[in-house]
Length: 303
Image (cartoon, rainbow, N blue to C red; front, side, top):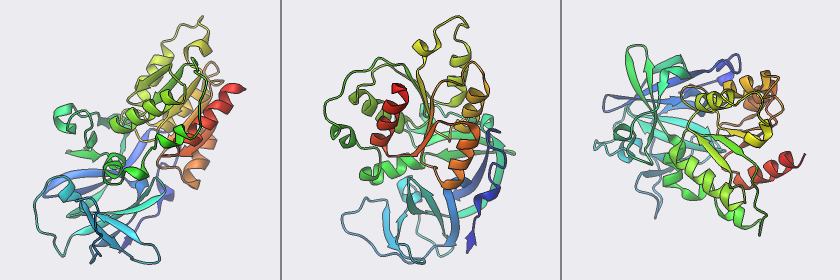
């Protein structure tokens, strides 16, 4: 059993670096952010669950926690018998533990987010693709999977819920300009729909921190800044520039520092909260708490 301790990940916040765990499925290289990984264990027998998604093998209990097991090769359409040497990558994000079956783990590469490129639709699988990036790890090209999108498809009730907005009742329409950096195509669409439902109709979506930062930097110096961007919401994991680097750039800038900035990510943990606080984020919260996000936006924009 191999347990990972993430204290060494991103030793300095805002450096725009990531550690990618490379694993194989039928000799094809895939990757996951080490910050999502808790441990790697040999595959174990699982108890099947009735009426579960086809990609859900079942559950098992390695210690005191019952964990759902996802057949990642099966989800990706790979037909191969489950092997005794298969591994479970146990992850923790969106406040959930999930194990993903893989064929082998190759190692860990530390790279810059600038070395991760958005795949085109032929690679990602179309408008709601499962590949969120292609990483250059040494001489290898590694496909970074959108694990939030995978979990949202397998268990929609664990993802962003429009019902949280409906429960808020009638809301006033707001024209405050809201800029959002989110690389997951599916989650970007869900966040946009929920915020529009909540009355925030002046939204500008960016697929990564780099494009948001370039647009921000391009604003005329004599413009009324808050009429252009009243608040920024950013994910952490994004190709080209991650949310921590974006936060650092915004908050280190005397011009842009007054803009409220919220980190909205599946990776929010106590360690990540400390990093975000050090970088100057006004608020941080975990996906999929979209209702909480709207409450915090209301509060920050009312100041």
